[in-house]
Every structure is written in structure tokens, then in C-alpha cells.
Amino acid sequence: MPLDPHIAGVLQMMAAARAKPTYEGTPAEARAGYRALTFGSRTPEQTVPVARVQDSTVPGAAGPLKARIYRPEGAGPFPTVAFFHGGGYVIGDLDTHDNTCRDICRGAKAVVVSVDYRLAPEHPFPAGIDDAVAAAKWVAAHAHELGGNDTVAVAGDSAGGNFSAVVAQQLRDAGIKLAAQFLIYPAVDHATASYPSVEQNGKGYFLETETMAWFYNHYAAGYPDPMDARLAPLRAASLANLPPAVVATAEFDPLRDGGIAYVEALKAAGNQAEHIPGPGMIHGFYDMGRWSPGAQAIVQQGIQRFGEVLRGA
Image 1 (cartoon, rainbow, N blue to C red):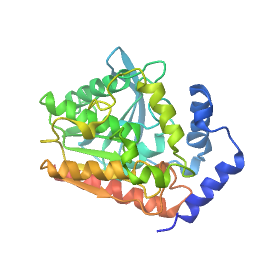
Image 2 (image 1 turned 135 degrees about the horizontal axis):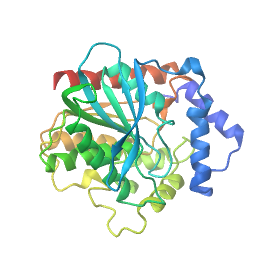
Image 3 (image 1 turned 90 degrees about the vertical axis):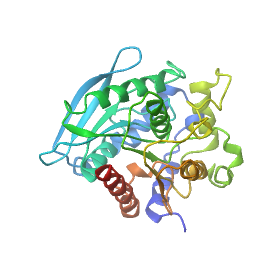
Image 4 (image 1 turned 180 degrees about the vertical axis):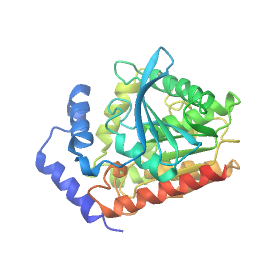
């Protein structure tokens, strides 16, 4: 379908600002620009209400990490979700994804633990994913203390979707059972040139191929194997016995076809996996519902389905 008109307006707004492209700037500039676009542009009335928000810490691979815990209305106990934010492994933080975590907490009726893992290039691969695995293991072991029940899942968008997929594989191998994985336009395969969506959507739709390369070069350019399953979870030796997956994609996203390929690969390996398409949407639309009613409707659809999987686990 055509690009959502409200999303088109967001793209026009960003173009009119004439900001330096991410791939032409420094990580510090990119972080500031992303924060201004997300948390910095949110008004108080656009903040999604939840029962309680608490800043905390969780153990990472090399020390404590900042975290933020969201609790829904109601008596509980609730499912618990370890959330990993997107941003190409280089940008993003607890604030940039605050509303997304609030949406998941409220819509899926779950305790959400958002993890502020270490970022590249200061901490290149595998620092961030090592943090994510360590944090998820801790969340799984302490869910009851966090107000949760025995149902534990992972969720994340973009790079955080990559982390969530990898964490699901790593915890499976460690004998830790997760109830679900919610992968929002995840980066699951670095052989991106083979996907038509990269050529179709790699320019003019917010996430561009030059930016993707910029992110990867900061994160893992020095690592010799881009098909390592910790970088490209689609390339894992085995995709069997993984938790049920809800995978959201966006029509005008270079990562679209990789996400769909992961759904099909999970199914072929005998897992429950379902695709929530985002017609008319672009990468990053899970934080654009305040501007686009169409985006928010698709966001709620994905979150509702994730909540149903959690309750059925």
C-alpha cells in the first residue's frame, strides 16, 4: 500500500530540518539527534500511562547496567519482559524507548525491564550482546522479585530485536526456557544485499543503507565473521526449540525481508512464529504512533498479539 500519509509527513519534517545524515556524523551527534527525535519531541500528554516506573540496575557482563522497570495496572503477578532498545548498537537509551516500553507494559499487561546495555564504538561487539544475555538471565532468575510470575520473555526493536533473537538462542542453549520473543523490525542477517527490501527501501525511508553500514562498522567491523550467530541469528546452526515468536516488520524498511525470512526459518525449524506486517510503515514506526493513528493501530496489534502469546505460554 502507499506510504502512510502521517508517516510521510514525519519524513518531510525530518527532511525540512536539513539535519546532517547519521552516517556523516559522530556517534555523539547521532545519539543527540536520535534523542531529540524521540524522547525530546514527546509532550507530556503523549506519555503512555502505566502504574509505576522505577529506575534500577541489572547485572551486565562487565558490571551493573542502568535499567528501568515498568509495571502495569492490576494486582499481578504478570509476565516479565526483558527489553533491549534499538539504535544500531550505537545510539538509543532508556529514554528514547520509554514510550515503547510503556506501550508494551500497558498493552501486553507485563512487567517490562528495559536494559541500557553498553554501546559501540566505545564497547564494540560482543560487549552489547554479552550484556543482553547476562541481563536476561538475571531477569529470568529474579522475575518473582520484579512482580512477575514464571512467564519470562524478551523483546526489542531493530538492533534490540537482533539482541532478543540472539538472547533467545543463547538462553535455550543454557537450558533457560523463555515463553516468547517479540522482535520488532529486527536485524537478523548481515547478508542484506540478497534481500529486495534493501534495494527498494534503502534510501528515503529513515533507515538508509549508508546508515546501516555506519552502525555495523562501529559495532563489529573488526570482527572477522559477520555470519556469527551472535551477529546474524538467522544463520545459527540450529533454530529448533526456540520460544514462540511475534515478528513485526514495516513495508518501507530495508530490514523487512530479513524479518520475514526469520519467521519462515523459525517455522521450518518447528517453532511457533507469526508475522505482523506494517503496511505503509517505515523503520522506527513503533515510536511514531503519536503522529500517525495508522502506526499506533499496528503497534497495538503487535503488542496485543505478544500479550496473547505470553498469556498462553
